Amino acid sequence: MVQTLLWIILGILIFDFLLERTLDYLNASRLSEKLPEELRGIYDEEKYKRSQQYFKVNQKFGFLTSTLSFLVMLAMIYYGGFAYIDGIARSFTDHPILIALIFFGILGLAADILSMPFQIYGTFVIEERFGFNKTTPTTFILDKVKGWLLGALIGGGLLSLIIWLYYSTGGWFWILAFVVLITFTGLMTMFYSSVILPLFNKLTPLEQGELREEIEKLADKIGFNLKDIYVMDGSKRSSKANAFFSGLGTKKKIVLFDTLINDHTKEELVSVLAHEIGHYKKQHTIINFILAILQTAIMLSVLSFFLDQDTMWPRYLANALGAKQAGFHLGILAFGILYTPLSIILGIGMNMISRRHEYSADRFAVKHYAAEPLKNALKKLSVKHLSNLQPHPAYVFVYYSHPPLLSRLEAMDKAGE
Image (cartoon, rainbow, N blue to C red; front, top):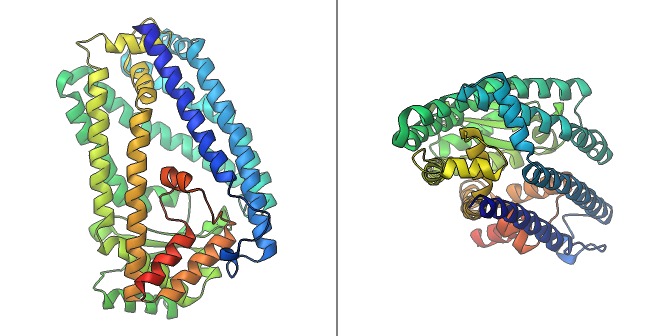
């Protein structure tokens, strides 16, 4: 059984890797040296060639990093690397929670250190070459340190609680873990932009003026209670622009990147805000939260089967990774791989729903504000980000949470008819 489980785990890893590479190949097959007719008016010849170069560079870099990660994972499983780290953790303590914290701490730190040269190259070479990078070495280092500390405090605390529930509550584990994770997700949804985000970026209330007056006018028109509009110093790290909506109820906020404000007209910015408000008015935030709850319930119910302490599964999972003793940390690592096919299916479903939400929010913005400013804003964003505007349909189906630009423009034209 253990040997069979090992080969299933390796087979899933290989399948996932080949699927990603196949989709990457299909996506690359859509590249064209000549500016396609349907992109004229969006890209000029020079910008289009630059977008193709950006795509190719990132694809080659992504292939290198993903292949190395894949080979390291195969080696760690086949040659007992995870069992070796488990042995190191057990040499310090026999407490299951501390063993798991040491185990995942070593893995997380080692993975981050190994990937750091690639992160540095991606940020300071590729992004710099195409004019996107604004991150300084100091900011990069501070982000790393803050990330490690948050991971240790929040991730370590959450993991400790879940492991304690696992060993203390038996059959009630997955239900109680479900309550903990949903509570945590809800708190993050409500307070992320107030508590976590300010650790990395500065949020400043949008100052009084024409833009704020126009946004508030739109909000009043559609009955949207909006008080918190913030500008984030996105230019601290990148020239790329964005806007997002966060929070629930009285904690809701709309955040605009300063790069977005700098590059767009007042009408374009209001149209982007109309789109974001559309997500809220159409209950997309609540729907996504409910879907997250369902996904968590599915994952934990399957997990409870594999980690049931009254069965041999925890030992089988640990043995498949080369370890002699069972442990929650080993079981959840092996389970994470076994869960991959179902995770892919659920991810595709979530992306399909997300794309529908984007179309819906676009229609809302067209109905309650105007189509042309939003279309112009999306075109500007795509050109500024050197986006690939002709992705392969299969790649869109699996990975895209937002519809491709041309599809959104076509849908808005139909909505405005």
